[in-house]
Length: 170
Image (cartoon, rainbow, N blue to C red; front, side, top):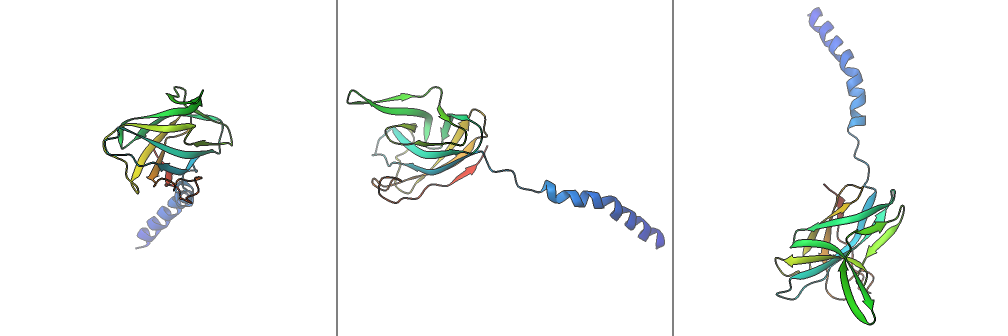
């Protein structure tokens, strides 16, 4: 019996350093350097093959670039720029993505940089969630849910809408 107690005491002493370190290992991963808020999309009409998504990116780290997007509702998602030139609205893909300055905020919005959803597999309807994976030049990918909002309910458009959720992802 004395041998068993001695053996147990030895094991407890040997395990003590591991137990003391375990809480440090169990800490949560640091928050992502880039966060997305106010993610939303517009409903499409029946038969539409393209849609859009918008959001605001907050970069809490060093300068980076949004260089790619994937979406669960279409065949292709691209970063586009909408601009009016000589009274004509034009849209073009941004091959180099969108710059995210260190400590800065960039809003992807109508009549500016935005996410184009092409080859839609179904219409986008109010209340639906569009899952986007944002890819950056340096930061880890970020998974975002954009909510399809009714016309006039868009953030910043006087409708008081809330954002879709965002979380770090891979």
